[in-house]
Image (cartoon, rainbow, N blue to C red; front, side, top):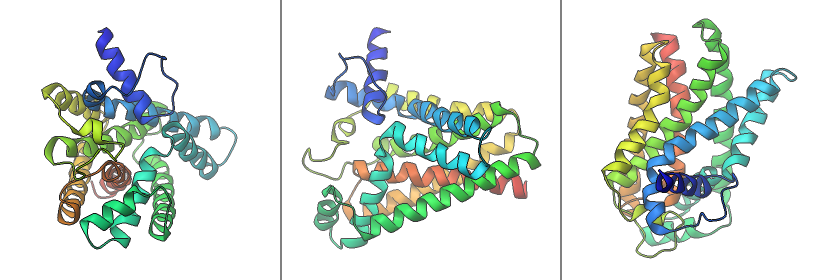
Length: 265
């Protein structure tokens, strides 16, 4: 149990800005095992985002409350995944060879493609969550518990989609220059089972209210499939930035899927 707590705190330290005990470090072995808790981190980030939205909505409009929610999520993770998304936009937008794409993604500066990508990402995320909140009234999912589960499910499922790439594909870089290299070296059955359990549990619980919501997994993993094909085509695998971009895209796809399910089913 003590070891598992250490592994969890390693994941918490690596994927968020939440303070952790001083004895937690970036030990490669624990980082490998921490991938099992990546979707669980989504519970925390999703909970923080919903909590900020819920509290702010008592004082401000829904739009302002959602902006505060997005800010809270970014502050919690340190824009970890948004940074990866921006780097992927810059790398694949400005590079035409594997070497050039990897070199651009390694650069800490953000370019035009990354800037435009982030602006469009935040606009889309804002609009889909606004639509999700309004449509929740139509399907009678107004309770705080159901809305909390929607936020948490979006973050846990999208992180499951991202970390599953580690289990099925090869890391692209041949050196240790990427921040995700330690978690990409190896994994065991425990990492796969843990990621699946924590990634799917919130959505499974939510499906007790409306079972059709499980169908949201289909477009999310279709998006994951096409993203991986794209990464494989250009850089023969994935990098940490690719995982961050996958998480962000799949989170938005999840929200869009829920809206589509409520509209057509």
